[in-house]
Length: 494
Image (cartoon, rainbow, N blue to C red):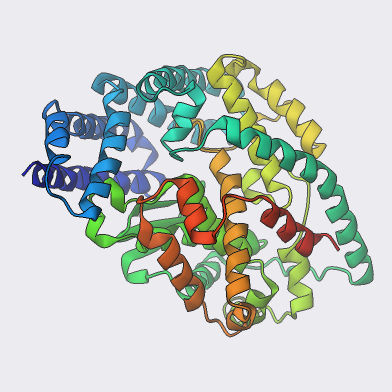
């Protein structure tokens, strides 16, 4: 049967994905600097091998034949999702994939070195190469799917999402946030005037922070027999569902940024660990796009990790690992701190969406050719000044060089972060409605009900539904930004 041939192919492709994922995680955590060139070549070859196998001429015949076979409902669904993915692959020639992989990896490696030196002039040519290939990729994908170029790039991260739908939502959210940020800051100032913030001790050894992170990961449901925690320049969740690689970074002067980063990546990891194992080697068994993935990470970081109920349970855990004896009134001003800042990954949940919207707008202009890489620092500074009242002029390390996404070629990814925040708030609204005692459960350190709901409605579904369908099936309504606004107003509005 042709379906059986496709099943065998999926197993081979999944093995290559496995190898590539582990190599990428190792490259970011353990590889010596001198190994970069050879690693880029090795991963380029693996990418080419994967692409050639995934786009072999006979696959089209297998698909056509399998679609006429007597298949179960799950098999038919798996076949449809495979065809969608296959269409996205066949529009990219193998030599292009190899060239693009090598260009991206070399740019990312250069970024790690030059960002620390604030060297835009040295970095610009490498990023220009990545953007040039991204434009070429966008054109190839646009032809294959009948989409606008930027939509074609988003399609690989969030199938079904379109700029025409997202832009109005982001535009409205931007107006709300530009007005709300000063209000949140004013509320914070009044609270601090009534009760000054208790300072952090500033003495947090890395190993103690790591043990705290591992304890929190296990508590919220992470399976430590199928994953690990390491250090990297930029926190990420990689690996494969049976071997999830979480990374974070540490500052010995404070612990919250590392802990929140760890919780965020644990949200990603829980999604991966909860995917349907029986379809793990098929596209059907993969996560449904990055907006949904971000909704799971942000749910753990924001809806759980910044919830006062969580901290009523967590404070004794923090005390055991770090020796801090704090009350809930002591910790919440730190956990709910709002500040205009330059760095996206350090931003609070009030200002964070403005960082994402800025990038979303700039990368659309880059792909459309309305903006060139050489003009990025100036364009970035203009938007940062308008949205958050901050300047990055002559500071590209904290401007267009701050993220790994563009150096690695992940253009079209950024909107997923804020879409994820909207989806996370919408999921919480349903859970809070259906489980009125959920805060009481968290105060006792019980997270099973939260995980059970997401496992049933999100994780176990894999890629069975489009993102909009999955949102509506899980929450009973289409994506609705009002839940996110309500969340912010309730927590930060005074």
